[in-house]
Length: 232
Ligand SMILES: NC(=O)c1ccc[n+]([C@@H]2O[C@H](COP(=O)([O-])OP(=O)(O)OC[C@H]3O[C@@H](n4cnc5c(N)ncnc54)[C@H](OP(=O)(O)O)[C@@H]3O)[C@@H](O)[C@H]2O)c1
Image (cartoon, rainbow, N blue to C red; front, side, top):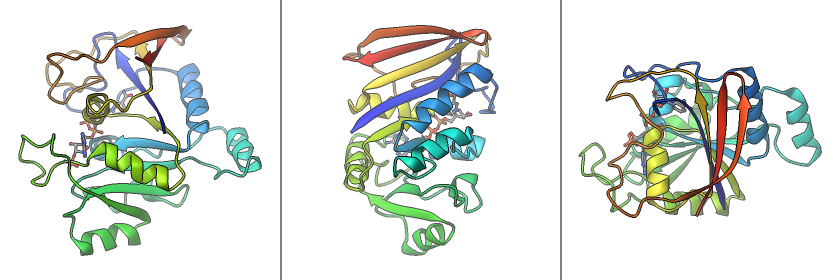
């Protein structure tokens, strides 16, 4: 399994406003870069917070890339994955349409009827045991999805290269679990501010054992810069 994280942030490290409204941080050149790395992935993963905030579709924009994948015997679009302990993904979410397979990684305690409703809406639901390390916040009594177990379940389904597109909670958890191999960050020329605005890595934050990165590339796109890293 190879996990690549990609996000766009302001110069002050924010992914969106404090109202969690989606913002255009990059531009057409970066959208094309993201489309290219999506096309190379078996699946694109987000947290349910991103689904609720942005209602993303997470499919390819460039038809040529879809055709290229089909020629290589792959699905036209990468699969989509939502980390969603409580099964909160709305049944009318764009991510559940039939443009690609969508896996919902839910907690083992999500009731059968909710799972059936999500399946009927187009999802492939995978129940994953909660993580012991999560949940000092009471929001998910049996813990958030254990991401190590979740990625193992996805690998069993033949998904080997995952592109994570946010948000900050899920990105932090992936770093905390040591699951990230590569990171690319588009830094747009804007300041968003706000102590409660989502950042690249939220969660509880690290106080030691900080993940260490090696800078592997810089590229100017639109009016910003892409920073690429390998995770040590
Ligand atoms: N600029 C960008 O590139 C970009 C990209 C994506 C998103 N965003 C922005 O980011 C914001 C959403 O980010 P977010 O941090 O609030 O949400 P998120 O990371 O997308 O999703 C977090 C949610 O995922 C669920 N989850 C399940 N297992 C988890 C685990 N092990 N670790 C962490 N979360 C887990 C939790 O909800 P349950 O407990 O209910 O399961 C949690 O609240 C929005 O404002 C969006 O616009 C920006």
